[in-house]
Length: 219
Image 1 (cartoon, one colour):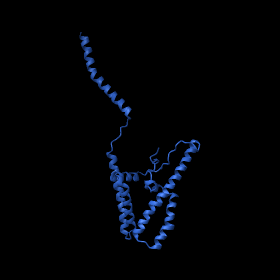
Image 2: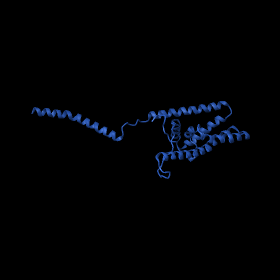
Image 3: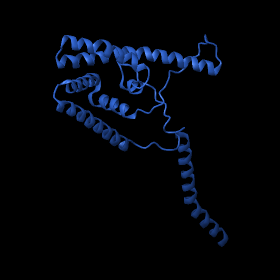
């Protein structure tokens, strides 16, 4: 299978309904994103312009909109995709629709290794507080973007770029320090060790048997 076709399952949603970056990185350029963007442009933006809210209120409302509505849209989309994938598997295998046989959930065809490295870095660095730090970092980014001066927007983009580079470098160093798995399975390794010991024993016994034959000829 080509390296471009890596089947990576999506991680579960935090608390069962919060959004995940792995899902939205794939769904932003699909019709699923219309369910997310339409209420934002048709309802949220007109309300913020009508009531003339402060910049930090716009940032907080936008972040809550992504967390709540984006998570609900993702939950509905996942359920629909899982049902469609299950029907496809049933049709391909010619199983009855009432068959109790379990079928796997849909997997993504894209390799999102960068986001997986970020999730692993957060969980390894902050433990059970990783979700709290995750929300603080993202909310701070929204504040940088919505603050009126232009330099805060540039600083927010540079901050995310620096964090991404640091996470990738940390993941690369971790992979380089990881122990290399042996190519042989345990059973094959055991057979190879036994064979090597047998060869060593034969090499040790060979000179002794030659000396015994010479003594026998002398007698």
